[in-house]
Length: 100
Image (cartoon, rainbow, N blue to C red; front, side, top):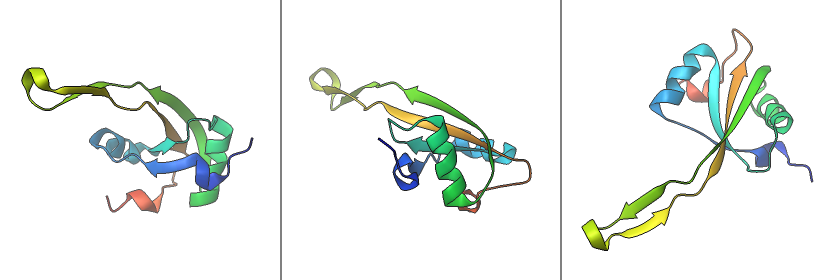
């Protein structure tokens, strides 16, 4: 089953660590769980009209979270998700991240 470029990339990851990487041409995105590196590369190139050099993919693990007070707090888990760190060719950037 093939994934379209709009389905492979779900949203950008906006965090302090990921924003520091943008200075080095690396951008972080949350991607579909069944997307592979080639599909992610094509999706970024199609959506933002840039040249992608490398794509690193990692699966974040579920974390245990407690909500509520002390002993009666409700315990649960966050959902695991897939993240892609995309490195662009030198001199290129994605304008979407510049104002953040």
